Length: 274
Image (cartoon, rainbow, N blue to C red; front, top):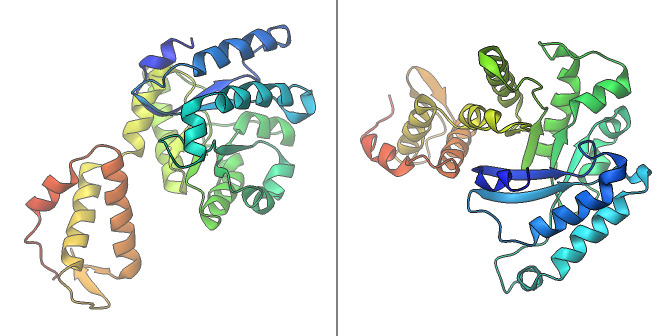
């Protein structure tokens, strides 16, 4: 499974030392993972992460000691710590999986400068609150909205939505796509995937669509011609500063997703305000 992850093209591969590993296999899994992480990161994987065990389990310190020690012994990582190389300090992504964590979002977000994002662990959260997950996901609406809002308020880069438990078949793909669109509309900018089959669907759902990119470029092109005008109209709709900021954010995300923004911008270079 570790070797299979090398063939993925994803933003991040998260290696699980917690729920996916039985108690009697923890030490072996930890050693295997350290060996795997000592190799060069695959070209298609932008980041690698490790999900450590719960601090109450008594295993978390061993997980951290193994992973961090391996990083500390990596000369490339050490150089990065001193701004002499491409490697940066490790980042923390916090899993929000209980009523207590949801109630302390502000404290969690401010706990460390290394914190870069929040992940909603829906199954653990459902267990903690004794609720049943339904296809509509309405039972998670408050929690998901709170997580996104807290992440934005503290300028965290990543807000990763819940796992879709369906990973095969046309119906499973449809459910996954609907969940991705729903999460994106709530403000999440990523989705946890538990099977390679889910990756392309999630990536497509979180990538700006053709019409969305076209609109964003038209707005930014016209904005450059308005000479500081407070508000103007495009397609019969008012455009002001917040709308322009949204358009620029869409363009930035499109570029990250590999869309040729420059070519589309050239097509609309003559766009004028109404």
